[in-house]
Image 1 (tube, helix red, strand yellow):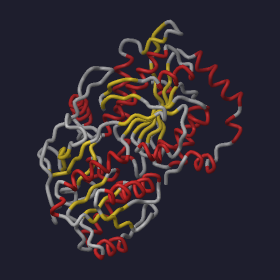
Image 2: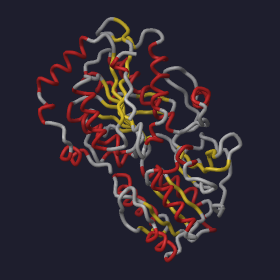
Image 3: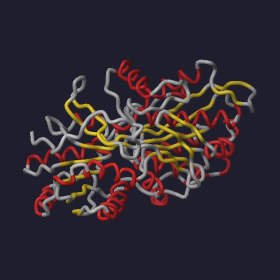
Image 4: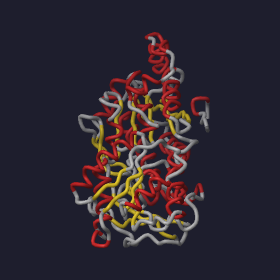
Amino acid sequence: MGDEETVTRRSGMTRREFIQKTTIAGAALSIPALTRRASAAKKRDFILIGRVNPNSGALSSFGETTPWVDDRVLAEINKDGGIFIKEAGKKLPVRIKLMDSESDPTKAGDVASKLILQDEIDLMITLHTPDTVNPVDAMCERYQIPCISSNAPVESWLTGGPYKWSFHFFFSVPQIVDTFVAMWDSVADKTNKVVGGLWPNDPDGKTYAEMFTKRLNEKGYKVVDAGRFPNKTPDYTSFIDLWKKEKVEILTSIQPPPDFAAAWRQCFQQGFIPKMCTGGKPILFPSAVQAIGGNLPNGLTTCVWWSPYHPFKSSVAGYGSKALCDAWTEKTGRQWTQILGFTYATFEVAIDALKRAGTVDKDKVREAIAQTNLTTIVGPLKFNNQNYSKTPMVGGQWVKGKKWPWELEIVENNQYPEIKKTAKLIFPIPKS
């Protein structure tokens, strides 16, 4: 690999907030710098894609599949010479430069600007919560670079809009509410329908608190919300006391994984064990679930965006979801994780758009992305006039596994019955 392929290992905000807070020098926005970028890109004999990823920090479990996926996709794309670019009259190989956001929004924006202005990328790809996606997309909007993003709820992503250069695919908050409620409704006669919220003071927390409360009240649930709180809060005693007082029987969270793990341990230590506990961000991945420790993950429920059981195939190589999971496990020795499919699918969109554009001209690439109509390994994608596309979601539950310490089973599929259930819901949460 050349320098362009070097891999660097190392509270979200809206675009307006980010640009106000960023310390990037204003001179970086100079016309000469952007002109040099465009000129250099046209002279290259390869396509350079920038990647911003949380390799380290609190969100690192989200980014764990990225280097492996990057290597795999490069091999698939470049085995026959790369992507045919009509303007160049030949195939151009694809190269990737991966930069670490360190799970920090300001750092994410900083490395994105360097990829654009110093490395002179042709296209940006970014994933993994609004803390990464929103500041990277902000830089792409600022410097007018096509960007494909994923793995942040649509509503959280929209807080940084409107967008012209950035295109996003993932689920919406109403989808996740409906998934959670479908699991809760399946045992509604066995709970008092009182829900406690762990919604921090970040883009996800603010969005979830507002939208969950409204939709849950409409569906007959009472919400006990103790208010926004900073990430890395060490003590949840006041929350637990409130939940006990209000007789909360269902708990939900959208915290970073280490924060939820601390809160959930304290719940058990202080004798508060709800009948159900359902989370998005904190309990999506095996590594995060296992880090909770002991038997505490048993019965936790979550959303499932993608799995080996999803009936979709790669538009690049033709294999299905299970084959991608099996390849990951064979190569790394690790359990499949649902972020794997979305990390891969961002490249599917990029490759499809570059092929159709037939050029690396940024305006034509942007237009090609906007016209995407593609079935990927995570499902069909077609961007609307706000530059996003929704993807399927079902409900899952962590149980003690046969092959792995904890395995994620699909227990709810009301919105997408074509994605089959693999187990029945365990209820209530085991107390030990």
